[in-house]
Amino acid sequence: MAELRFSIEPHGASVVVSVQGELDVTSSQRFDDFLSEAAAESDQVILDMSKVDFMDTTALAVIVGHWRRQADEGGRFVLAGARYRYTKALWITGLADRLPMYDTVDAALAGTGSGAASGPGASQPGEPEASAG
Image 1 (cartoon, rainbow, N blue to C red):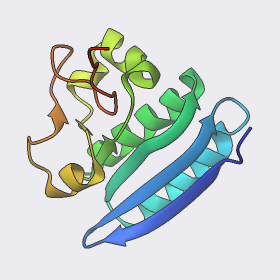
Image 2: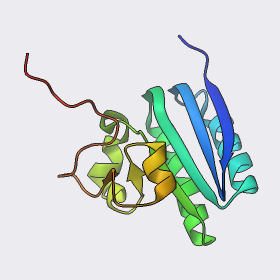
Image 3: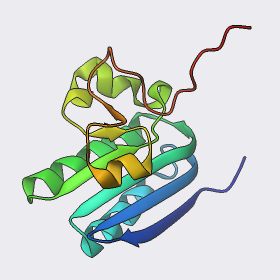
């Protein structure tokens, strides 16, 4: 099992929080603390999940909590590169229609509709396209 790694990188008015590894009940407090640190640096947080290998519902709860807190305080909290299989619960509950998700960090930084998932019929963030084989 790969070690869980976090990093925070400023991008203009935003900070990009990158996560690499597995997010589960054993790492949820550390994950929560790291997102709190990022929110203290900027009210514009982009969570890059493109290198997340596994995520359980405790990690989703941490994400939803931070998204709600940022939104309540007039900030912005978005996901980038999240794979559908890890965020499926967000789609099932309807939260994915409200929590901004982008295919890439660049699309999230641009804040445009380009690369954004807008509902269950949209291409799912971070999932590779099926290829004929």
